[in-house]
Length: 162
Ligand code: FES
Ligand code: FES
Image (cartoon, rainbow, N blue to C red; front, top):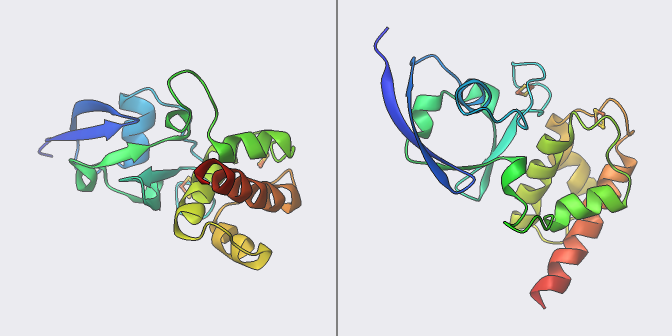
């Protein structure tokens, strides 16, 4: 199989990688770039654990995305949300403050998916949050605390912007 050279900007740093064409973005993040914060859950698009943000806008399941299709794109993982001095993103802060994290396995994907929602809809209703997060599975929290954390994050972002 012919290998491809691609360039990925991940959390602000450019990486040139040579990959097999069948490698997923999740494979490349975890195995080539040593970024285990993007989780492998199902590998089939069912759990959302592998969610990343593309070009600061679009949330995707990295397990279903061929890395070659991401050539030249900017990818944000959960580790890229906080600022250089370690200040958490308002969504991360809200998850911590609202005890929306238990085992933490779903958390990177949940947080990134929530960031994507708040970019499109800064003040989502409970129903809109639940619908948006449908593809992200949490086995621990019962979702209640996650939903209220997303609402709290929306308020934090609005306050910071005002
Ligand atoms: S690992 Fe990608 S959706 Fe489950
Ligand atoms: S906190 Fe454990 S799976 Fe969500």
